Amino acid sequence: MSSVAGILVIGGLASYGIARLEEITRWGTVIYAFLVAGIMVPPTTVIVRVFLFLQQLHLLNALAGVILCYLGAYLPIPVLLMTGFFKSVPRELFDSMEIDGCGPIRTFLNIVVPLSRPVISTVVILLSV
Image 1 (spheres, rainbow, N blue to C red):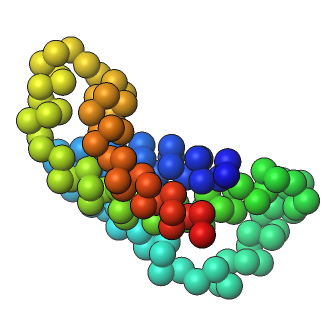
Image 2: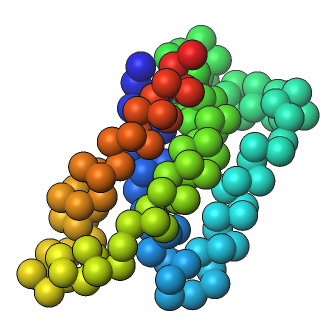
């Protein structure tokens, strides 16, 4: 359950940043493509490297090692789903929060998180099964 919470937090913040960055520069598209390309990598191709990496960090028989593996393996899924959702949020909502004096984190917590409850529940269902 802690891995799902970590994936939601990191994936949500990354997706919000990518969706907002794509409006400004093309680097958002590059970062998005790099993260979503992780879906195409089969786990069997990286299993030896992950094992050696966890062995060097002394996390082979630890819960933190499993959480790190889950974060790396399942992070592209919420980035793919949430970025598409965050792009559909009207720009005027962000502009109005900016006029009211809210920063990016407060905008994320007050506007984006309540609006994204459906996609958050979808990600939780997909990652929990």
